[in-house]
Image (tube, rainbow, N blue to C red; front, side, top):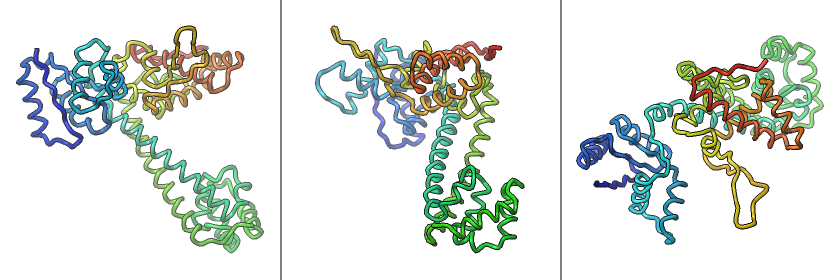
Length: 371
């Protein structure tokens, strides 16, 4: 048997390069169904090549760099890492029984949903940082306002601050204009009395009059609104894909389109996992183990390796499932009664949730809520 080890650099190959690679693979073995192609996971750098190989019907294996690193070290005590050594390591892993699963067509095309959920994750994180800036700027320009409203981060407050970005601006505002603005923005929740309260607080405010900060406040509000629009558009696309997938994960009370999509997209092809424990390990939610002789770690911690996006989605989804589903709610209460910290109890419930999701996704069954 001939093993052709090809190394492809981080630069993008044109289509001719892809075709040449495919022809070289075919020249080694006519029956391409017997060919295994191993690639080390490199984020977006291998995405185009991986899609090309999958479309050609080749069995492609995407291997975690941590896995290849540990495997390479197990073969030699020497600290050697070169491109040739890496290629040889991957080839050796493909030939050995290390329980690798090929990258399916389903997994490849699932990348669209994964891209959307990760993109949304980054946008929401960016918006959260901007909201922190809003709180900081209001503390400088009009600190009393925070005590007068339930939250600064609502449309009526943003409309007020965008039009009057500071205590001095609010204090000098015409009452009719101020009243109309807050009433319209709040859809009638805030009345003329509220506008009077805002203006009186502004006239006795200790806030600073800083035009530069006022300008920053207006621009920050504008950026948040743009992000709101972008996030809504992303969520619409996510919902469209989830409706097409018709995943049973959405039948679990408390799991929304957003968290459900992130969980499904990060796991990908459930058939690649032999058990729910493998998914837990992939999410970095398995406890670390250390035992040597008579020494055994009795306070093991989570490994926190693998997909941080999946770990985030599972923990957040679990918190809501424990609120809406009686079975999980009782399970969480049981763990809390055992003296476990809330987050430790949530981690136990998250493992239970993973086992449930795995069962539903592999069987195609819908979740039946306990009465």
